[in-house]
Length: 87
Image 1 (spheres, one colour):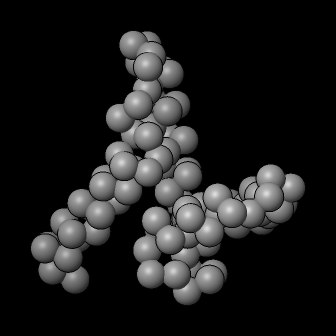
Image 2 (cartoon, one colour; image 1 turned 30 degrees about the vertical axis):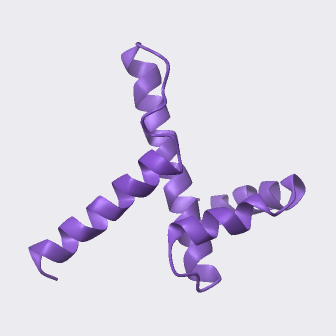
């Protein structure tokens, strides 16, 4: 993979993290809370990537749109099943 390919993927991650996952919207000035916020955004992006691959979606934004239309009970089941992945 060329350096440009890596850069392109990183730029796509930051675009999604900022526009769709609220990376820039942490109201806290405390470093620990900002770090937790960033880690939560990374975790959310990981969940979007799992959904994207599982359902052959074109991008993480499509996975987010799909998840927004699911009910909360099914989302909870999906999050609990993540324990099997990261166990």
